[in-house]
Image (cartoon, rainbow, N blue to C red; front, side, top):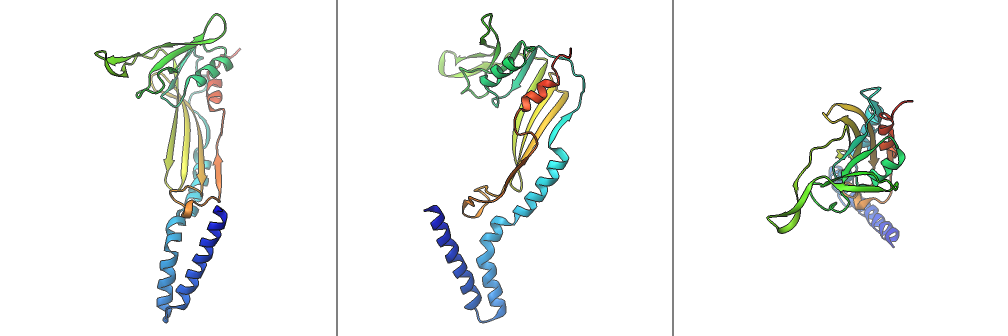
Length: 232
């Protein structure tokens, strides 16, 4: 039904273009009428070639892995910064990287809080991962909703953060960063995406068109953790 509706709209639009060319008596009148009819299409599509050109530029210049410090010292404890990572990320890293002893990440019980409440995830003697709340959470004076009352000081040697950013011309940027606890960067893993089908930019939502990406699409945390894995 959606496809049929689009075909009908397309047919009506072609008929409107033909009418805009035939009805005006003067040549300038025809050009003005055509420009008016085409203006919605131009308004919704002019940035597509610009965006794709910009996408290829940033892919060549910024996408991929950039290491700022080689031979970084291994760590026993890291921090997954912000609410972009949940308890599943902490459990995954503890399972995948045996050298890690503890991971600071969003607490599973209080994941709904803003700002984020943190917990320390570590392996219990039975091999399972357990979480201990780091921050102070509760009600102000025992009244009202549960809030983050006090954030504990991080004890991690490294921090991994993830940022998502919508850029002009239908571009999206995803970046994972590994840095020392004092803020010095160790490495970044950057990916970009481009799509013709952004419903906020595209005529009728455009359920077709290009959608491309560059840079690592998965395993970003593994790439960064490999840089601080102990070397035999």
